[in-house]
Amino acid sequence: MFDILFSTSGDIIPLILRITAFVVIFPHGAQKLLGWFGGYGFKGTYGFFTGTMKFPGFLAVLIILGESFGSVLLLVGFLTKFAALSIAIIMFGAAFLAHRQNGFFINWNGNQKGEGYEFHILAIGLLLALIVGGAGVYSVDFNLIGKF
Image 1 (cartoon, rainbow, N blue to C red):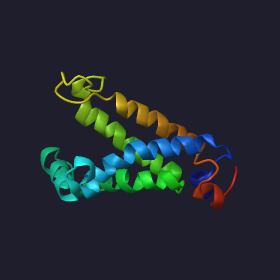
Image 2: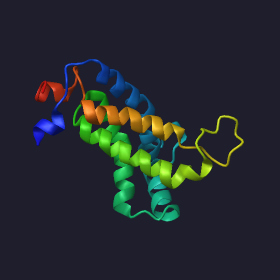
Image 3: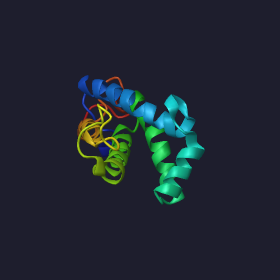
């Protein structure tokens, strides 16, 4: 089990993927958890998920913590495959439940009712590469288990 969870190569490319994923996912998690970057913080986000979206409370908490702490796990390369899968599931859910009705494209010109799902597809692709390839060199995973 640990071999599958922590397995990775000694390649540097996953480091680039992990840093990129952190840079684009962490601010969204920080909005949800801490209220940074114009977000509503834990209480506001939890209320939106459980009230407006009708999610069960445990799911709202998993989403908030998954984006926040999952992105940090990606940055340091610890439990990378688990964190990447968790965030990919969150991105899929966001694309399907919250952004699908707005079409494909990001709302660059402000002429849509909301954001499309193209960002989510890019994030999922980035995360799938980490799920398959692991954290790479310069990661906690690599130092714990090493190359397989």
